[in-house]
Image 1 (cartoon, rainbow, N blue to C red):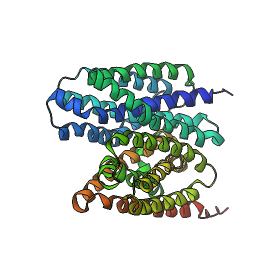
Image 2 (image 1 turned 135 degrees about the vertical axis):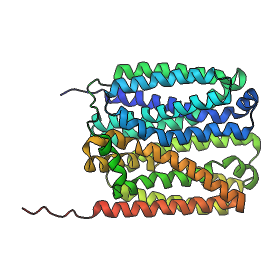
Image 3 (image 1 turned 90 degrees about the vertical axis):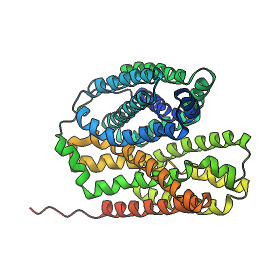
Image 4 (image 1 turned 180 degrees about the vertical axis):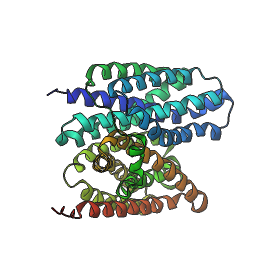
Length: 395
């Protein structure tokens, strides 16, 4: 039996997730510089963020249906190599149109890379260690928020914004090297047809499971997208303290992802129901506590502590259901949770914008609470369906 360096593989994929998260989020810290350099408005520059998320959500599953039939190790390495190339293209962009194109292409490649990595983990890591492994890998995105984005922003602001993309390209070279060393060559490729893989989206239980990360992520981003205005206008946090609050929030999300690995073991869906109820309560209490800065901060950080717990359970549950429905669709199934999360980001941000425009910032906690409660309902239904006894086969 072939042995796999599980620790090395998880470290390599965690670093890769750190790279992908930095690439995705770094644009937020450079919007002003890019807008000024390319002579566009901030609103137009902001489409680089939404364009990335939409391309990720739409393009990833499409590309996975094609790439899943190729040798997995070579596909992951080739994808990282293309990510490096497109980051260099982003650095060389002198027009908004070209930069948007390179960001859209990069988004689809990032989605493919993390989906293939998560599929590989579900294939070669021992079942008892999969929850912890996935939590570490997804934690790389949280580390990107805490460490990668501030460093990239600093480089872009003190040199030129293009330097940040050169930095991520160099990080990509390191990820390419790590993956070449530790990814086993015997990883299987998918044998399922396009029709078999897409048939997952017609299965009611899989669609229901897909809605768990959509709603759970939407609840978080309906508030997180507007965290700065909330701190300024509702919580009265001094401007010079905002970066420290964001740092604390980012650290709490890393803790949340790691906690997700513990929740994912055993009765994961049953535990996740409770997490969503706790999350709902935190958002409601945040509404009352927010005007008092210290109390508001307590509940804001508590909300971050539960924000990412769902990810590991949702990832593994979607793969589990998909393999039951169509064993050859594991790779495509691995892309569903990242896609759902990006749909949640877009939907939560958009809904939050509607609430802010119509009722003001104080309505955001109630919006998040309602979405979290919806996530609880969907999870509870999924849990009941999973626990429902299967009929015995007649002989």
